[in-house]
Amino acid sequence: MSEIRANACPRAIEEQIEQVDRRVTGGAYSNEAAEIRHAAEIVPRLRYQLSLVKFRGSLNLGLGKPQLLLGFWSAEHGDVVLKVYGRQRPNESEVQAMWHAAGVPVVPVLSAGDHPVSWLLMPRISGQQPRPEAGPELTGHLAAVLRAAHAVFRPGVTRPRDLAAGVGGHLRRVLAAAERHGYPPPGDWESAALKYYHAGTGTFLHGDLTVRNLLQDSAGRLLLLDTCGYTGPAEFDAARWSARTGGAAEATVLLTVWCQSEPELDRRLAMRLLGLELLMEAGVREIVKEERGIDWTVTDAETQRLLLAGSELLR
Image (cartoon, rainbow, N blue to C red; front, side):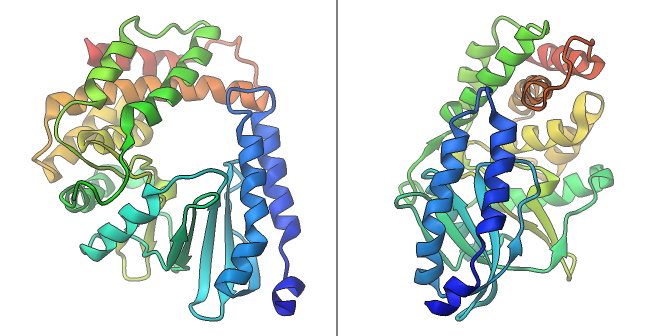
């Protein structure tokens, strides 16, 4: 216990709290200031419980997310990563463990808990983020990985995290920011979201696909990180990745590539979900301006392109 106390990490945690505070001040996500503090409160107990004897450094990317990502040396497992949320998010560890047991390339979970908040302990794996400019090649590779993940579904294993409730609330907040800035979304987007988030055959989703949540290990394998564990149509993962990676110009191209590697997907549904995700990207651009104090009165051509492309796909 004394060794753990001697290797404390308070400054790293304070810096993360400061990053969250700067991002959410007066914004739509001000509740996240309390979340990051809840995460910080549980770290000392987890260090003792998991025998995390030496702090290796913060692994947060400086984005102001309300979660802690800390490197430690574990007496039992060696180099590890401790991820602590400021709220309960139970499906991440369960879905990640389920996928790993089924052979899906995902970082394994060594230990996890959900009380009073969710946390995961994972091995620290050497590797790097793939290059986003790899475009279609990376998309095809990732789609093959998710095809295997989407096939792993056992109802009742985890508590469902409804896609409409989780993603729909975020979409509502960011589109409200876009509308405040003079970029009104299509009037029927809410009914479209309710319809398409519940369409198709439900399965466990990654839910947050971006290059930041992928790791290419030393053997060249593509590993999944940071699963959300939502339940919904598999087409959502394809749409989210394509919108985030391709933007207004390349999203439909990437979605076509994805569907070639996961041919079971309903392409029409995937395109409708892509429309919603392009609206999401437009709204995110605008809410980030509010969070960072960026002048939003200047016309943003990319926001306009994203809204137009999303609206057309929803028609």
